Length: 75
Image 1 (cartoon, one colour):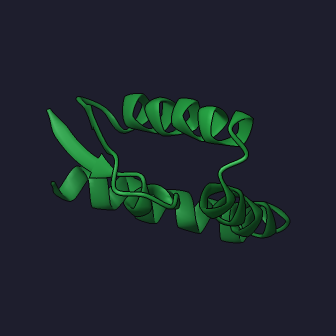
Image 2: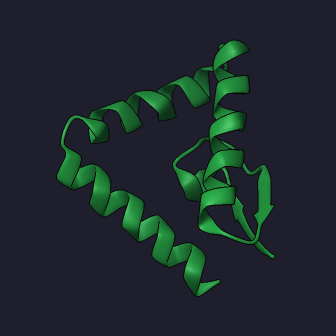
Image 3: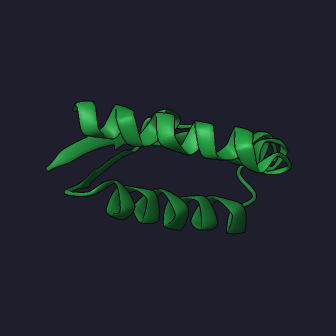
């Protein structure tokens, strides 16, 4: 079991996610992001806007995603 924080995954807080695979931890992060979006949490909305900028360029987004996967694998 590995642990990463919301901030480590591009978010805005120190909430910890625990999972066995990167896919599981990404899903937990996504679920948390949706909850924060529903609450209109400003810090998380700002982080989401930054992620949307990354998504405009698929190459940049893939590089970011792979860097997070490597960070998870190194834990």
